[in-house]
Image (cartoon, rainbow over all chains, first blue to last red; front, side, top):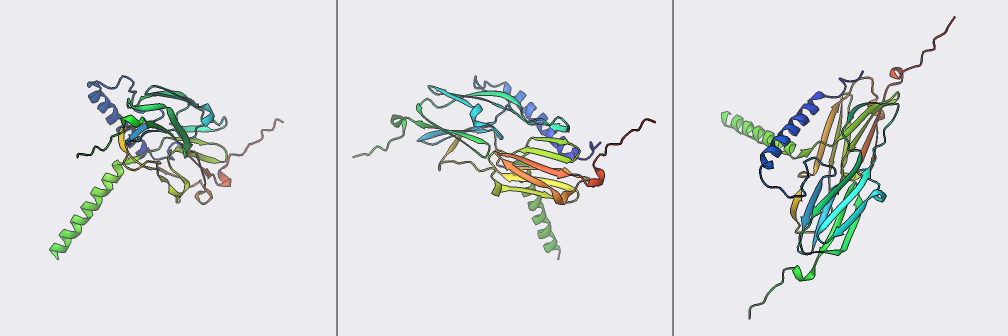
Length: 146
Length: 133
C-alpha cells in the first residue's frame, strides 16, 4: 500500500553503487588477494589501524549483544565470531530488510610482532574495538651515533 | 559586471564540486523498514555514531538521517586495512501525508537508530464487524 512512499531514487543510486563495487571486485579479483580476504560487504565490516605500539581492529557491528561474542588469538591470527539477531515484528509488513541477521565469523591476520597475551576489547556505540599490543623488541629504537 | 558573473559562476561550480566530493564520501546506512497498524518504523545501522553526532530531521515530505562516526584512535595511527572508508552516514526517504511527522520518535542504542513515525488516527485501520443476520 505504501510501496511508493519511500523514494526509489535512493535505491537506484545504491544499486548502482553495488554494481560498481562488484565490477571492482571482478577487476581486482584477478590480482592475488589475502588468503583470508572475504567478499566485500561481509558483516561486520572491519578496519585495522596500527601505531608503533599497538594494532587496533574495529568491527562495525551495531546492535550486538557483547555476550554472544567469541574472541580468540592464535599467534597473530585474530578470530571473532558472534551472532546478531534482528528482532522481527510478526504483525508488520516489511519494505526493506537490509540489516544482517544471523551468525558471523571473521579471521584477521595481524602483523607478526603482536603479543597475543595483551589483548583488550571494548564495545561502544556499535563498534567493537580490539587492541593488541606489539612486542617491545619489535618497536623502532632510536640509535645514537657517537 | 561580466567579471562578477564569471566569479559567481566559478564559485557555484566549486560549491557543486565540493558537494559531489562530500556525497562520494557518505555511507548509506543499511535499513529495515516496516509498517504496522500504528505507523512506520525505520531502523538504521550507524555504528560509531553517538547521540551528539546524530541528526534526524523530518518535515512533511521527507525524513533525513545523518550521523558521523567517531572512533577511539591513538595519534599517528596508520590504516592497514579498511572496509569502511568514510565516517559520514546519510540517507533520506520521502514521506507521505498520512504520517504524523511532528510526532516522530527517535532512539539510538549501540549504533542502531530506531525512528517511529506514527500514522494519523484517521488512517489507522479499523476492524469492521461483519454481522450475520
